Image 1 (cartoon, rainbow, N blue to C red):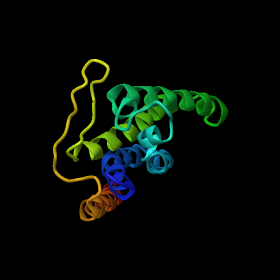
Image 2: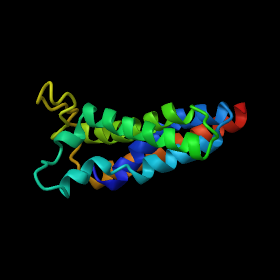
Image 3: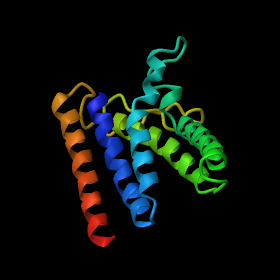
Length: 162
């Protein structure tokens, strides 16, 4: 998918966890998590800029999602010490945001015929739903609209419940 589609899927994926964070009394984490996911929505496509990496290779795998989760947990550890007085809630939060960012990207790319090699290095098989081409403008805008609607619905539900 293209940027708009990836942003939409990121919003869609984070709508429920974001609502859960708001209901748990952590709207600050909901805003930060959503913002980080949108900011890094295109992270797996860094493979376009790194010589030697093929597109939709290493950076489009569950292993990369786990690695980015570990990076997020590391950032959460640092922030827990520096900003949050040592509270450990930022460690799993950082892991979740790092991993979900990549997983949302993989989900969007799995909608295309090219798919993604989720299980690399265990398998080179590409997983694809073959629903639309990545360059389909309508599909990218529909994914963006779906993500915005899911986020708005989650916000309305949390406002009513909370």
